[in-house]
Length: 340
Ligand code: AHM
Ligand code: MG
Image (tube, rainbow, N blue to C red; front, side, top):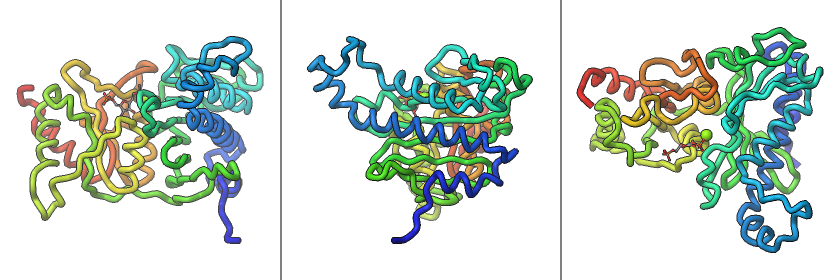
């Protein structure tokens, strides 16, 4: 039998590469691995649970309501992380405020975690890929105390780990601890994540652009001109590009990482900072993109350098193959002063 590297083995082998190398980061990753398996199982039976078991009324003897999957995922991740006792607090897109864990063990933890437990959740009901995104920072407050807001409001460059789980045609966990990006595919038969995509790299260029073009008339001139550029015919630069938009950031990002492409969620007239959240979505994927040789921009500089001032802050977002992001930035800068 050929040898497969499991996520567990990989974490142990690479522990020396992890910042600090004290085992805590490994425990965070293994908590994420566990929670993602539980969430994966629930996602896979989403239609059945809602339409058949729920209707039968016999599944839940306490008479509890069927939980929405994003709330379910939120709870599973919060509990799995808490149980390892190495994270002092957690910030989630699902919750208005961060959670500072109460136990002494957690308050002795060196890290905080930010996450979007189920991104693209509007796609659940229609059987389209969704994902979990996470980001880990060292805390700023004193060890042995409760987590504070300043622990969460850190620039992307301070991340010690980030990653995502994609619940797609197969389930994958992709992460970085600052030493490249590695992807693991879940084998449901043995309940294990196997290293399937070591050292993932964004192609420098690609031919996929991903944007919600329904917003076209609400984009600024630079974005509209860049979209026109993507659609122009020029065989020497592989244009027109192919338009692909799933509406699940993780899935769009994952495809573009493998094939080469750019994902954009620009500012619109109604939403001057775009839609996506800096701390739960943009920063973690920016860390992954840069580790994979790609890039992530607000259109006005690196996402990784944006100073957060609030937990749910949004930023315009351009992420993917380096040369494509650079070209988008050039269009944005060139048409900066133009009328909307
Ligand atoms: P969510 O966190 O509420 O799921 O929103 C984030 C999602 C992204 O996954 C996706 O790329 C984007 O919102 C789609 O938004 P839109 O429908 O406006 O194009
Ligand atoms: Mg989201």
